[in-house]
Amino acid sequence: MIQKTLRVTLDTGLQARPAASFVQQANRFHASVYLEKENKSVNAKSIMGLMSLAIAQDELITLKIDGADEAQAMKELTAFITAPSAAS
Image (cartoon, rainbow, N blue to C red; front, side, top):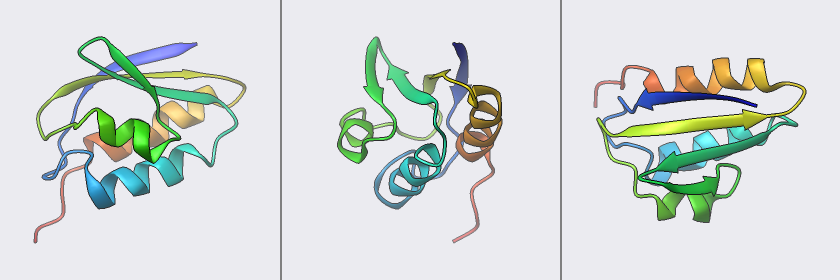
């Protein structure tokens, strides 16, 4: 298992469309993927779980990944969370 604490840089945080995109990316991996905010941990492959965290821009979250492809999952999912937001 690997884990990393990250600051969310997306303008909208991980809400609505970005949350759905994140869940789709997480589901590409065989590894288990969890997000934790304020001691609440959810399965990041579940849109309902992810939305329940209400992750806003500039919040700290912990990404935990466990499985055969955990390193690649961590790399790609970290890039998603910390990517500069596109201009509206």
